[in-house]
Image (cartoon, one colour):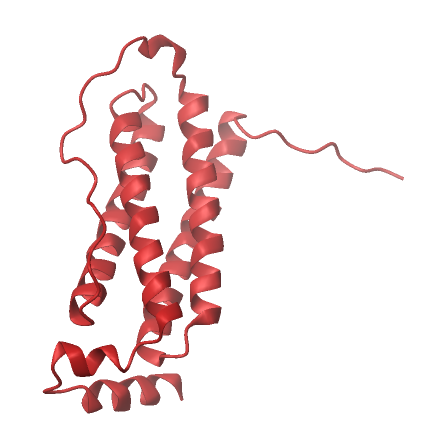
Length: 173
């Protein structure tokens, strides 16, 4: 049903100007798209710094997988904002310069930063999905949410394998 409503909505938008399209998106939806893009920009910037400091090759592959997904999502959000005439936030720097004492940044720290980032994006994507009334925009958030949930599963298993996660004690009766 959602797919049908999305298609009907998209057909109705054919030939509309940006000003006319702005009447089709709610303030909350444009905010969530904008906020998601800002979160992705921040995450991309952080990952670009940390990927250069990663020593473990498995972690580097995980970092790059996260980075690839977040760049794709950022492009989708940029497209939505442009389509509806919403100004884009400032982009992250294209180049990341070297930083000082890199010995203090361990692979465990990098992993935990990635873990927290993906976890917060899941929360934002879930809120965005549940607050959106447009089938078209809700579909985009659903795709982002599901991709991040899948990525989170991978990150958790990696963290358990490397003993990077603080596991709660086992409850025994």
